[in-house]
Image (cartoon, rainbow, N blue to C red; front, side, top):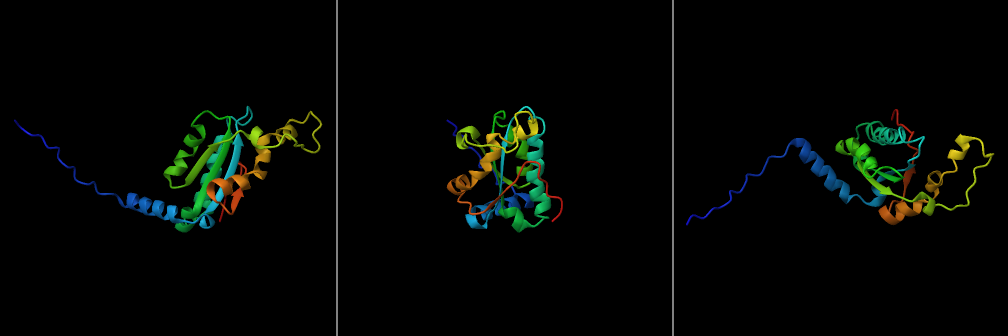
Length: 173
């Protein structure tokens, strides 16, 4: 009878980009929460936002990484984007941000029920029931920014972070 032995494959040589990415990933895990530079977004799917909200989010997050960090490896290593979202198709937020993650931006996303997280007792001054723009400001997702500090501390031990609207772009450093 013949015995078959599986050949052990030779280890593949890693490219310099893979080695660099591996070093950056391990260095990132070693960062303390206080050494991280956090950016937080909260976005909610609505009829008005369905076509523009996610592309604007992707542009904003990547502009922080590419333009805001101006090529600094230290800045890019420290930057971490967290996106709280609601109402989008499953995986849509992650898919939109995937090109930025392939470039090295660290992103975490979390679906949130904004209405359950934010008090019902909210009022936009000057809303007379007719102005659609002011009505849009009364959505729970807009008030979520006041609840983000506790969530960021509880989930990421983030001591500091910058909350941005999805239409914010970094243009120059």
